Image 1: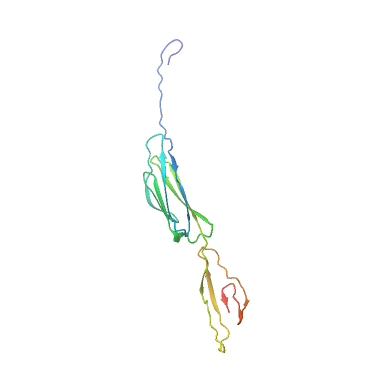
Image 2: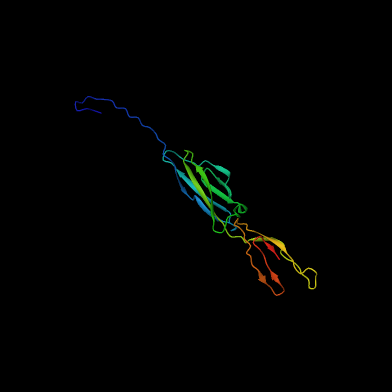
Amino acid sequence: VCSSDLDGANVTFVVESRNQAATFSGRDSATITEDSGNFEHSGVLTVTDVDNIESILPRSGVAGRYGMFGITANGGWRYVADNAAMQPLAAGAIAYDRFTVSSADGTDHEVEIALVGTNEPAQFAGDEAAKIEEDGVVMTQSGTLHVFDPDGADAVISESPQQGRFGDFEIDADGLWS
């Protein structure tokens, strides 16, 4: 640097290096439907960093609520859903498993798996049948019917008195019938 009188002066520059965050690209999401038979999804993430050559920190056997996740250093990831864990999801309900992946410089990125529920029919158990014989001593039978919804919804028995050809049938909200 020179001044107008041509006297020279030394100037010192200090250059500080600052880490620039890495950027991720590629497939970072998937959707899996309960009972679909297609419970495994995979993808590839690429990481780029202007500061240096980057890689992804590998992880394997990472448990989510609905399945297992893993990713390799070259960005290949895999998720395997546990269909049994998805059974409580109601029809159309969406739940998520999310996994954080990191580049070597510490930049984080999220892989998101959407899990979609389907409707399972209610299941009945208990006294589902009775036999009354003509001219028998007992002309009335009764029992209890239980209902369970695998989707976790409240299973309800509708009270519905019905008149049949050979007698009347009644059931209450608790499943008691006669």
